[in-house]
Amino acid sequence: MPESLPPLDSFDLAILAILQRDNATPQRLIGEAVNLSAPAVQRRIKRMEQSGVIAGNVAIVEPAAVGQPITIFVEVELESERAELIDAAKRQFSAAPEVQQCYYVTGEADFILVITVADMGAYEALTRKLFFDSNNVRKFRTFVAMDRVKVGLTVPLPG
Picture 1: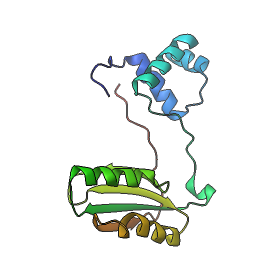
Picture 2 (picture 1 turned 90 degrees about the vertical axis):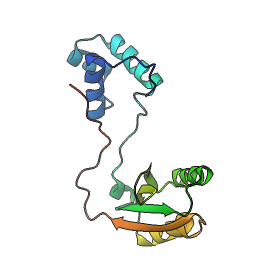
Picture 3 (picture 1 turned 180 degrees about the vertical axis):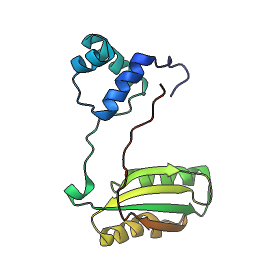
Picture 4 (picture 1 turned 60 degrees about the vertical axis):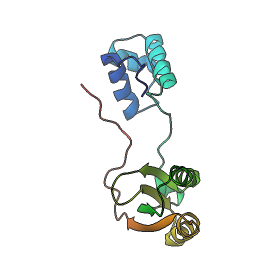
């Protein structure tokens, strides 16, 4: 978040809490819940979207319902950590639709990926494309999720 961004007040945080639970909540109902008019809520939401506080508005899809029931976590270690090779890996991982999340991390691994696939054959094909065909991937470790215990993108809010 840019430093020039004004701090979020209690109204902004209350609006964000509601939107994180259900982004389709009508602004009139949000206004009633936080004691603001619907136009005031609309202005605040627009400001938070424009400033990047609200990064996107999406539908959360159950992977199994669309034929992607397997979630896999992958630690990726690169051969070289030159900036241009790190950037190339970031671009490659970001471009793969199977990669739901990608984190550049500290420690032994350079990246942690969260991947969703239909079956292990699809994952094997993805490993060839992302890892085996890359001259910069030293090694990778795969962890297959046995159960989706908690999944979400809700950010804890102060207050």
